Length: 267
Image (cartoon, rainbow, N blue to C red; front, side):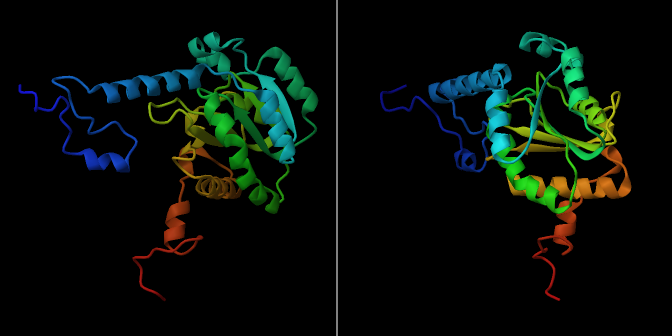
């Protein structure tokens, strides 16, 4: 190799990197990654690990929700620490004894909707996305005249903890906002889970999921539109999960929603 030979050999697919956060077209240095992509990988891995282990600031979140006009209730799952939570998913699916009593005291009667905000596997995602999303969603909830329980903020939460909370509030439906498992390009992704007639013991086939809600993923207006479609259909049909399909985009393309299929001729 002469002094003029390159050390790093770029990939022929480099231009595609502008279209995706995925780690493609990284080039090579000999048979290895170049130093810069290697350091970027280590940084992304560190961000993902931090998102998993970071604690959710529930008091700050409750204050933001209060400023948005939403009452809150602070609860804990049966997993008493982050280490236990990561090793025992089953404990994250149920409330602690103290939180169960707190929920019982806060329940005042049947409601249409219970909202649950849980840290899940990324408190980073909840801190970044939960309040901005709810600000977009709530006008549609209010316009439909739905009665609501206080927003339950749950530490060490798994999705199914919402079933116990929804049942405790006597809610017809529970919607859970939760931090999703961080990826190396998405440590801040929030998931939304909808369950009709929530009760302990339900499995994932009874839920509908909207994933990747974040600034660089599914936008808040898009996610709110999908969720409200699912909520309307769930209330109308009395079910959720595998029997309820997200047809919001299809209806929009057919002209039945807020958009129109540009491939169809004008009427």
